[in-house]
Length: 559
Image (tube, rainbow, N blue to C red):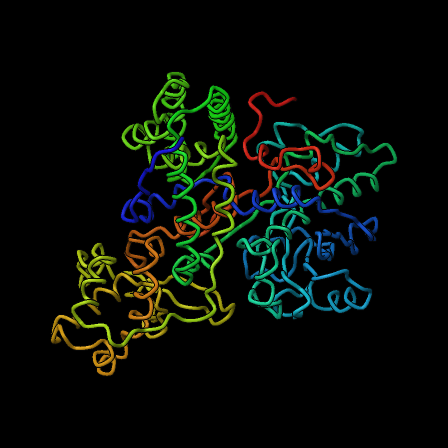
C-alpha cells in the first residue's frame, strides 16, 4: 500500500547549493545502461587487439544488442609524459576513441585512424556516435604495470586512493565533429534514455584500459599475472570536466525538468510506502553502511569539498543512529526519515539520503528511467494572444526568486557567459575586468525574466504578447523560454547564474550525478574530477552479477 506524498517544490530542489550536493542513484544513466545490458543479454567481443610492445596500436570492442551492434574503435599512442594534460586545449593523448554505429570494417578503421587521434582537428561521420580521448593516471599506471609484471597484485590502498588508470577529458556526441545527431538515434530503445551512447563508450573504454595495462605488464615480463577480478573492478574511468558542461543545464530546460521530475517522483513514491518490510529495512541499512565506506574513500584537496565531506561524515553518524530505530511496524517510515533528514543533516547528507532511499525499491522506481528523455530540437512556440497580465503572472509564478534580486548591483551582474574563439567552448568571465559584454550568451534567465517583467509593467494589462514583442523583440527568447518553464516546474535553476558568488561546479555536479559519477573532487570552482563505473562488473561478469549493487563499495572489502 502507498500513500500520496507531494513532490518537493522547485524552490527547494532547484537551488544551486542543493543541486551541487546531488549523488548518483538508481536513475543515473550508467545504472540505466547496465540494467538494460543485463535484461537484454547483450553480448560483447574483442575482434581486434593489435597493440605493440610500446603500447601503440588499434583495438576493437563490440557490444551487440538484440537489434544492432556498436563498435568501440580504440587507438593507443606513445605519449611523452610532458604532453599529458587534463586540459581541453591539449593536442595529444594516450588513447583516442570513437564509437562506431555497426560492425566497423577495415575501411571504417582506416578512415577513423586518419581522424580520431586528431580529435577536434579531425572529423568523424554520421556512422559514429561519439568521439573521446583519455590519458593515463601518472600516479598509478606504472605502479600497476610494475606490480603485475613482478607477478603480484597492485597495492589495494593505492588502487583505492586513485580509483582509475585513465581519465577522459571529453566524450563528445550529439553531432559534434561530424558525429550522428541525437535525433537520428533517439528512437532506438537502447539509446532513448539520456547519454546512453556516451555511457556505453566509457564502459567499453574501461574494458580496453584494463586489457591494455595487463598487456603492458605481459610485455615487460613473461611472469606477469592478470589483475584479480575483485581488484580489477575497483578501477573506474576518471574524468575531468570543466565549464564547457555547465551551460547544458540552462540550454536544455525540458530535459533537465524530466531528469529532476523523475528523481523527485521516485522519492515521492518511496516516501509514500506505508510500511516497509523487514527485508527492505535491512537493505537500506546495508546501503547506509556501504555509503559510509564510499565516503571514507572520497578524498578532495579543495577546501569547499573538504568542508562538505566533514559534514557528510557527521551526517552518516547521525543517520546510523536514526536507521537503527526504523522498524517494519513504522507507518510511512521513509517519509519520516526524509522529514528528519531535512532538519538534521547538511544538504550533502539530505541528498545522499534521497539516493539511498531508492535502493530497496527498484521495482517501484526504475521504470521512471523511461520518462527522462526529451526532444529539445524544436523551439517552443509563443502564443502571441496571451495578455500582458497573464505573462506577468507567469513570470511572477516561475521567476519570483529573480524578481527579488537587485539587478542593478555589481555583484548580481558580476559575470558574463561567452564562447571562446579558440575552442568554441563556454567560458565565464568577469564583466568589469574583461571586454566580453558584447559577446554575452543568454545564459542568465533570471536577469532576463526580471527585465521582461519590468518592461511589461509599462504596458496595458489587456494588450497581447504579440504586440509587446513587436516593440521589444529582445524579449522573444524569454517569452519562448517561459512557455517551457511554465509547464515544466523543474526546468529552471532558481539562482542567479552570473552572480559574483555563483559556483559553476554546482552546475557540473548536478549533471554528473545524473550520469552516475562518484567521488567529486573539485580542482577549482570551475572544474572537477570524478570517477565513472568504479566497482561496476565488466561485460563478461554482468550475466551473473547485480547490475546495480556495484555503486557502493562493500563494507569490508577483501585486501
